[in-house]
Length: 181
Image (cartoon, rainbow, N blue to C red; front, side):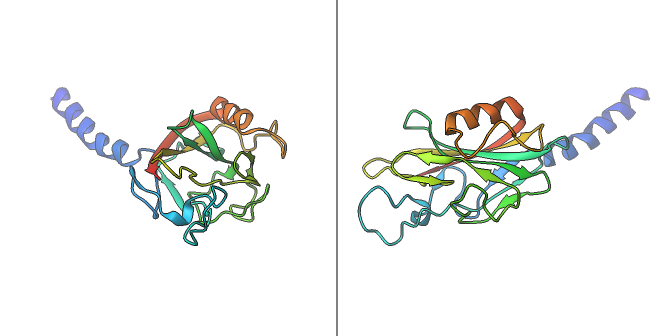
């Protein structure tokens, strides 16, 4: 009898655990899909008016209950994992980022968040969209649940690599989505 009760309990618990899996999505593209031109960089030359260098909208669900903040790191997986965007100190109460986060160290949304200065084909705070004019590259967005409310060791002059290391060290869970451009 005890065995039957245990089996029933295990079955009833399993769906609840599966539905709370940490997941990242975007309303702009599906996982593995094409990143729309509006999210591509404007610094790669050419004059395509559809390219606006706007960060895509991102949303996450099922983050760890112990998360004290979130951070997002975007990398070009086909270009030596080049970091295109780091935003951190996203409040634990946040579950999404809007499209076109301000290109400032302290964007207005989400309140309290900070971004790293991108030094590359463009020089700006925040998001630098895909810049692969002659190839199709895969870009990975990873949301990290962090064990700290604020990454106080980082500041407005921190590099993307320094920020990524600090985020990885404080990470208690991750979710990811990829897109091609």
